[in-house]
Image (cartoon, rainbow, N blue to C red; front, side):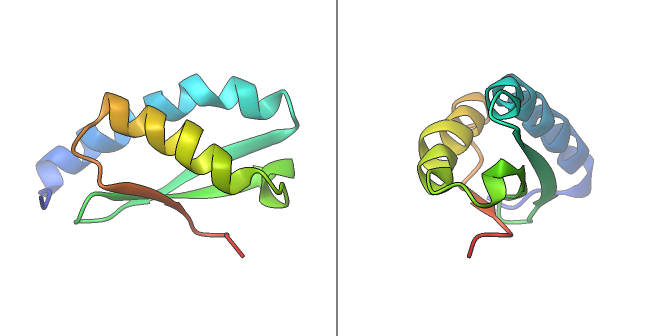
Length: 86
């Protein structure tokens, strides 16, 4: 599914709302996450911040927490990736 610019802002708003539901859990461990981009092929790019950047559990948090939450609220999303993964 490709998105058009009319829908893109709506999707970005919904993505940020989903991230806001997760953010308190990340902040509790001095971490955070930032929305970077929604690609035309419905891939969400995010950036880990704080302790999340170097956390050994960030890949598990990405799939079980971040991606699951976003995709459950916005089923059109294909995947969520971190742009600062090593």
